[in-house]
Image 1 (spheres, rainbow, N blue to C red):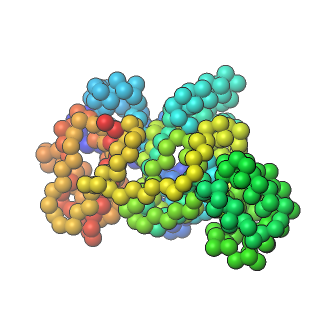
Image 2: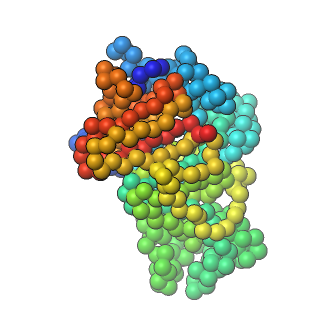
Length: 389
């Protein structure tokens, strides 16, 4: 536990993934053979990173379990039960992800116990709860990154649909007036294919300012009423370095771009539209907090994205010259290089680790500090995810 450990990290091949973004990040040929949606860096048991021990690849979760007090620190072990509490990802959507929410800790425990009692296998596609943990998350843009996040004020929904006289549009306006945008979202899911087609055509004729994302979603997911979601949800465009924090119950859908994502070490997702995966709208609405308003875009303060999450903290280190950068120790960390090249050191040159673009390393809590030095490339950028305070 006293050495920095390079990580080998799995890629998740979901159908919405890019065939070029992750390959370019890691310096591999493009296009890739299959869509590459997510690069996972962490210790989730369904797809853990691997560490090299004397030439043998060992899953990171198993390696941490050998001595969690040194890997995570005594406090981290006590707070998080000897499990690395965060999962770091690089997300590369070529087309939209599902409209979804994530549960809080109590909801996750109840849902997981319910599905375990029902006898659903861990990899059963009908599962919503693959573990008993909460999933707060933070997405930070590496390129322009587009998302839907949170609900529009009901008055905006009414205004956006005012020029459209179809049965579906009238139903959405009526639901928004009576019960807010959350009620309109429920009504959205009941729109049939005929009403959807008529409403899409009417919106195109009316020249809505949201016509482009609506048309794109309709093309990506034919016949899915989720194509109208930009009318009900806030559209956000993140510039590189900007981020969104998504608390439990926050409705969202990522539409495109490349981003670094850190979350609670969980794979619990509740979906209602824009997906070929299992949909459980009832469970999604049971977790949806339903607040309306504009989501807050985060920028780092002294390199740190400040969130209320206890599971993680995310920092970004940008190096223009060759001056060493030090990151405090005492907490488990994963370092990820997204630009340039850097050498990580604890002061012993024999154990230095080089990171190029797309490469990462695990730093145990027992290591007092890490310096990034011998930096090369244009504006080297390192992200550091660590166990929250």
